[in-house]
Structures are given as C-alpha cells and as structure tokens.
Amino acid sequence: MARGPLTRPAPTRPPPTRPAPTRPPLRVLVVDHTAEPGGAELALLRLCRELVTTADDLEVRALLLSDGPLVDRLEAVGVPVDVLAVARDVVTASRYGLSGGGALRRLRGVARTQVALWRALRRADIDVVHTTSLKAHLLATVPALAARRRVVWYAHDRVAPDYLPWPAVLLVRAVGRLPRAVIANSRATAATLGRAAVVAYPGLDPDQAIAPSLPVPPRAGAPVVGIVGRVSPTKGQLELVRAAPRVLERHPGARFRVVGGPMFGAADHLARVRAEAERLGVAERFAWPGTVPDTRAELDAMAVCVHASPVPEPFGQVVVEALARGVPVVATDAGGVPEIVGRGPHALGALVPPGDVAALADAIVAVLDDLPAAARRADRARRVVAERFGVAGTARVVSAAWRDAARRGRRRRP
Ligand code: GLC
Picture 1 (tube, protein in one colour):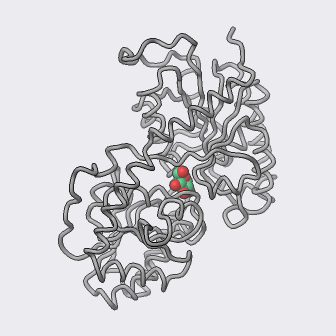
Picture 2 (cartoon, rainbow, N blue to C red; picture 1 turned 60 degrees about the horizontal axis):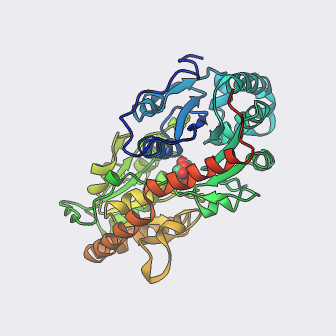
Picture 3 (cartoon, helix red, strand yellow; picture 1 turned 45 degrees about the horizontal axis):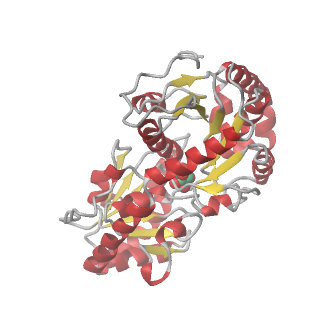
C-alpha cells in the first residue's frame, strides 16, 4: 500500500445533529481502478460527499488501484483513501484490452492484483465492497467474495457489444452474476447487464444548478455552441467539428468551445479532432479550453450545449449539468440520454440520431434560429432536473442497496 493501512481510523466529524445510531456503522469500501476524474469518478465524489455529510450510520472508505487526482479529492470530501499499487498495464488497458490477446498478456498482472486485493480486503474491517468501474468490477469481485465480503456494483457502463467487444461483454455479464446487488446509472445501462439491477441516476450537487428561484443570467455576444466532457471517440467532439460548417452556413457568427481534455490515453484523438477542424476550414471558430475544474462558467456562456456521443451513452451527466443551468441542449438519442431529456412536446431538449452529423447541425441551427424559445424550454428544464436528478436521491438508492446487501447474512464483527 502506498498510503495508510485500511484500518486507519476515519477522520473526526462534526458532532451529529441527530441522535447517535445504536447499531455499529455499516463499513463500505469503494474500489475504483482509476484515480483520474472521469464521469463515473465525478459522480462518485458527489455521492461520497452527500453520504459523508448526511448518513451517520455509514463509514465510507476508498481503495484505488492507481494514484492520481481522485485521491486528494476523495479525502477532501471526508473519504479516507488507500492506493494499492498494481501493475500499470492492468489498470491502463483500454476496454478493448479486456479481450483476446490483450487479456492473455495481462493475465499474470491480473492474478497478482487479485491476490493483493484479496489480502487487503481480508485485512480490512469492512462489510461491503462497492466497485464503481468495469475494471474494478472484474478485478475485485472474486477477491472480495473470497475474503467473505458482500459485493455491490455501481455500473456506469453499458455492457453491450456496441460499447464493449463481445468477449468483454460475456466476461462482465458472467462475473456480474456474483454481486449481491447491482446498481445501474440508467435504465439503459440496467437493460444490458443480464441480471436484475436498481437504477440510481448520478445526481447533481445543489450548487451545480441555478436555483429555480433565481433567473438564468442572459448570454451576451456571439452565440457559443459548446461541448463538455473528456475528449474521446465515444464522446462526439469529432461529430461536432463535422457539424460546424453546416451551422456556420446559417449562423456565421457562431463560436464553438470544446471543454475537456483527453483522458485514459486519448491524446491522439484530440489531435485528430483538431486536424479535422483545420481540414474543414473551421479551426478559427473553435476554442479548446481543455479541462476546467468547474464547468459552470463555461456552461453559463453557452447558447447551446451539445452532447454528440456517436455510441449510446450509458447516462450522460453533462446533459443534466447543462439543463440544470438553464442551457438549451441538443443530444444524441441513445442510451440513457432519452431518460433525461424525454420525448414529445414536454421534452427538455432536442434529440438527434447518434452519428448523424447533418441532423446534429440542423438541431443546433434550430436552437440558434429561435434563442428565446430555446431559453423558455431550458428554463422549464432546469426546474424539472433540479427535482429529478439530485444527489440526495442517488445516495438514498445506493445506501439502501448497501444496507440490503449487508443485511442478508451480516458478517459478524470480531
Ligand atoms: C460514465 C458514463 C457516463 C455517465 C457517467 C456517470 O462516465 O460513460 O455516461 O454519465 O459514467 O454515471
């Protein structure tokens, strides 16, 4: 372990405002393979902050299989973190490395990691192991069961052949039969798991939304068409660049902002997206602010926030973040996104077929053609999402799954 032992005492908390719980707290260990702040990890941070401040019958710790920014960010919200140093290629393999020759080459590293996990979990005083990434599910489930711990998965990825190679789909579904409970980040994700799952939408912190009682600040200057998220072939920055010429034909003053940087080894893809902007002659219309610590100011400046994932997005929390700030949204109609946006006359934004660049451009143009109408719809949307997608709801579902998993055959404490 690079950091303190798992048995280290939890940090002291402010005195509880409610009467002290009579039962010992439920001890949960969150396991993630990465310490980079991807979407699932940002959702985890919000969930942990909510649980640490509201649930005094829970003790949450984390075990990460790499060191990185998530370590300090989890500790800052009151979650003690341990880092288990494992072979780098076990945790950096792309999702395609989970299959075929890649898996065979990594088998030794995987076996060593699992033994190390089993040792760490056996020693740790915990009731529930909560895994929160595909690699954490695959690496930690069997060691946790061997260490006689309850296992709960929070699935943030669709386990489907349009998202993962077939061998990985089969492997994840097979291992996925073992946990006591599986939580999914959308109904779309739940439908791909091959077993029963409860849905907990990754909720927002109240301060990510503009409070319904406050007005949305007006946007000045040239309309900004923005996209927010890590830069990846699955997140649609390339599609937005390809849609830009058609948008500019109709709205020559429009500007584009690509907020977010590459992660998990996708630096080449950013270069490819920028080269495409040059090739299409739209590069000077694009700004690339990269990763920003807080996306609120970026979102507030957008006339429209685009979510262009060409593959079905498991959930799409950027869509909720934009709507919560009263920003009109154009998003691809697949995966979890329609669960957020809805369809028909009450839809909170516009949906377009994934990968259809012309439809994407036309939907952006439709927003820019009538900004007041888009603003009215977005204003209604922010009230709806503030109610439906709060982190308190996520915390309720997740902590109920933990309690339920622990109750069915609670491990006796020494
Ligand atoms: C993953 C998914 C994304 C989801 C997020 C939070 O990053 O790709 O769709 O919004 O997890 O669940």
